[in-house]
Length: 123
Image (cartoon, rainbow, N blue to C red; front, side, top):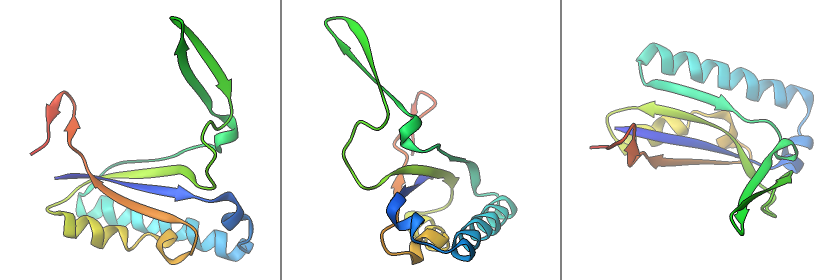
């Protein structure tokens, strides 16, 4: 079963962390990735740039309209994700609980099963 573990970031929360706390998060993610690779459960992981560098695309009157920066007015934004393949939702939750962001109030980690991938419904 495939699961997406999404990491929701709040810049104000991250800015309030010390350099040591930020380094610990980075180290924790490094260890988490290595463990997932070793267990064979990691498909891919990606980190995203700050939403101020995003482009929002919509179509109005048949023409694309592009707006710079984040569109949604939220404190949190998608900061990255892990796509994993494991035996169950319980295992996905167990893995997600190892991500250092889980221990920081104001950051979010969400687990969702993949329903559709590569043109096929997932089992």
